[in-house]
Image (cartoon, rainbow, N blue to C red; front, side):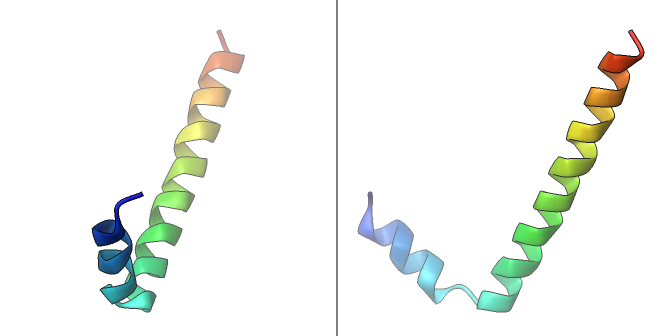
Length: 42
């Protein structure tokens, strides 16, 4: 693990990090569900 990566993570505003994390988490669920539904209809 690079210490610079962790230092950057710690410096980032916590609320902004959580907002992006939640956004991509929801997008990931949506894409995964979409792919699953598409494959189920094949």
